[in-house]
Image (cartoon, rainbow, N blue to C red):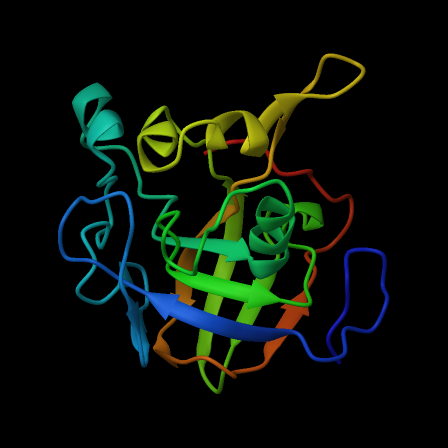
Length: 190
């Protein structure tokens, strides 16, 4: 059974695209499939590894654990951005996995996402996009990071995770959501 954070059954939660890039570029080209490696990330991707690979994080402390092995974005965000004039295709915001039909931003820390037949990603937190996103498309940063009426920072640019079980994933693969035991911790930036 596939469930939302509220316990509703997910019908049709799927991977819509997969992407990877060996270099540290903002966008990642889409592929027919990608292979997730347990404890490391996406095979052939610049962010593969046990320790952090994001350049700004490496500069701070290269020994910190890599909680950002896999970046996932919901394709519904692409739809919303298109409505306000931003054409964004899968992989262009740097994600490895583009999904449809699952509320990624509403998942708690520790949620397990089963992708396809074998791969399992544990959700670690929210992506915190940097100013590079405006180099990709001017004005995009304010669409994916803003403050709500209460002054709280809202991040919409996807979630990050670590690979618990490896496997190949491809567009069309089903996604199964397994929530962690309660109490649930809401996502924060990683």
